[in-house]
Length: 295
Ligand code: BEZ
Ligand code: FE
Image 1 (cartoon, rainbow, N blue to C red):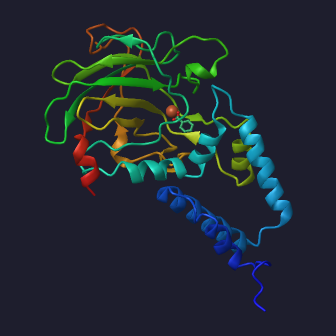
Image 2 (tube, rainbow, N blue to C red):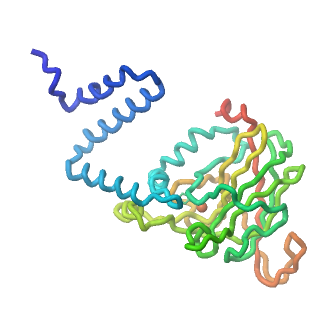
Image 3 (cartoon, protein in one colour):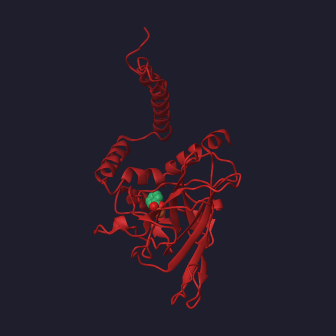
């Protein structure tokens, strides 16, 4: 007699997926059935022990407990496993000339303060002054009026939201001028470790991986009729470029942070009494239809 109740190590996968037959949402069926297939294949491949499965469940439970309105440990987990970046790659296929996207990260804040072109957005963040400029344009070179949302770490490698006070520093929004030009003053960010005081830190340590990200400034560029660009400009000499903890580096996103000595004139005309940096980087956007059609 055919035994249809006692599933075996192989047909249990099909049995689980057959229970989706009443689901009316085809995308959900695809997602759940594929996830089931891959998870079951994983369990079979590594011959997962019950102790290991329990450990994994405790790990995910701790990951959830670590999440607050200021800390998203699941995103961090997705980041270090390369899933965030893989999702970015799949969803941001663009023509070669467009600026590439990279991970969003956990330190963006809605409603950052507004500044004007030329302002100092560091707002007290510690670090060496850095004058940033560039132009927002389309892949055919047309200038684009856009809103830039910018955020970065300070010279100690921390974002403002990582400090216990509520001070807002090293972030802001500004409008480009009509020709797409933007320029602002801030401080030069440095390489920093992603937070390691939670389960993700335990995971990295367990597999002998370092938690460092190369120095970068985050940009979100929004313009009507164009795809929103979420990206970073990395410091092109940073020692962690080849081993970014979250796999976010693209060779097209390396910026030249040029050092100048005290006594030189800054782009805003100030004679600086300390060393400073300049960094120029253009943001090239795709029109809403272009990005989806291009390989
Ligand atoms: C960041 O660049 O801010 C970031 C990205 C992923 C994980 C942690 C930090
Ligand atoms: Fe960052």
